[in-house]
Amino acid sequence: MTEANFPAWAWIAVLLGVVIIAGLAFYAGRLLAQLKAQNQRRDQALAKRNENLHESIVTIAKAMEQGQCPLSEGALRLVVLLDLRVESNQAGYARKYPSLHDMYERIKHMPTHEARKQYPKAEIRKMDNEREGYEKELEDVILQDVRQLLKDFA
Image (tube, rainbow, N blue to C red):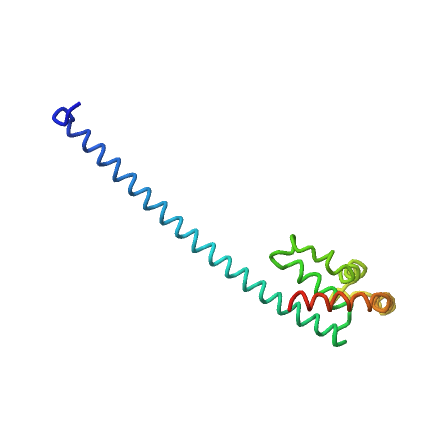
């Protein structure tokens, strides 16, 4: 077809197609920009969360090292905080700090806070004695893990 034979409605259809494609391209670009901004906000939030977790982990580890925090309580808290870190699945914290995880596994079933108050005093005393026995048994290796953790998180 020559230009003279090309009907006006065809030109309108081509022009309409170009406008539609341009509009869709603009919309797609806008969506991509929104996705990029959303990913940046998510990454910033995760980094802030990891920073807060890092600070808490170091504080608890230092308190344990200085004898200001019972080893069992510190182990419970550290294992949970380490598991909350973004990279916890790949980091292998259970392999890096086996004594902390050993203590955690031994005492995680013991009630804390309000749940603890529901038990008779004799039962609480029995659990405390068990926990303190674990602390004495694992003290040296837990402190080794704590020192290693402090080096790793320095």
